[in-house]
Length: 129
Image (tube, rainbow, N blue to C red; front, top):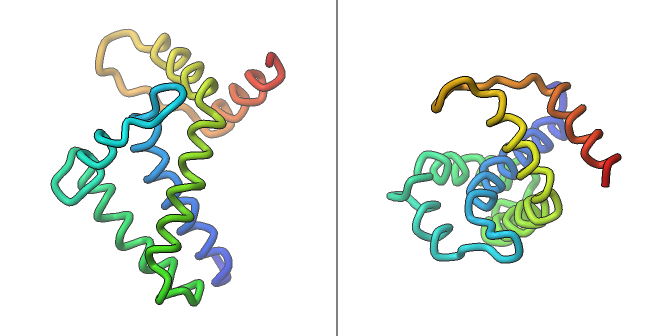
């Protein structure tokens, strides 16, 4: 990163990643399980570390973008964009999860996929649709 704009883009992408993670786990194909989101994405929930990281990054993002007085609005915008990302890409997420889990030799195995392979998988999936 070499500019303030680069830092802002990175922070927003990181926030989207954190929020999309909890939303992806709570998406039921056509609606979100709001109770699960509230239960897990808080200071004591299963996603507590992501929740705390999100707060810290959101404040940094607000400060760097000159919106320090608009924390709630910024968080709402991030949430809305993350929910759209998950809903718009739900079929691919299911496809990728199945393909990656099929790579596992044993339960609990960690599978690391390079970015270019995931991108290739995404492009191939989109062409088939």
